[in-house]
Length: 254
Image (tube, rainbow, N blue to C red; front, side, top):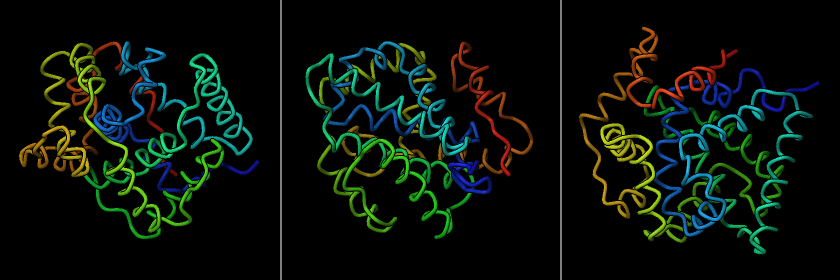
């Protein structure tokens, strides 16, 4: 059976690299907290109560789409849709359509930002491929009005950033939970990483300024990562209970 994502796709390279995955979710954690629909996260309580665990479960879902055949990927997308419908029934409200697009757009953007920061910029064809794969994922999640091309998506992404983000009490509460679950020094490291990854609008709302030293450290790590220092870095960034799970995210690129 055909693979949902071709074996040599840049998407497999990105989502099979634990270092890139860590950066994707470091940046996403900042933007999640600012989204105008973040109250949905607090309705279930799952992300505020275990933000790292819930982000890692998102990785598992993503890999169950990216690294499997078409039929298996569609089953995973169906489970995600069913979970969303269950939350909507419990709350007796409908999750806004724009909120689904926001999350999809966020994963596209931070996939590119994280890989670029750690290794190198994507080529034009790789950017198009990244968007094409996530557009198919969006269609599988019944997300409407998705742009036709990467270039069109870039324009819509900027519109969503300006329109759909704001600093709220939920933002403050979610960052408090990040600090509680990470500890003080891991939390401060998270803020530094977010400041070099996030788009300007996110940094402005969170009053973050990128640190040149942190930028250089991350870029240097990308150059020396073949020396197998990942275990040391993962130990510094992630609490001990998640170390084994993080190592399990590694997939060998074709």
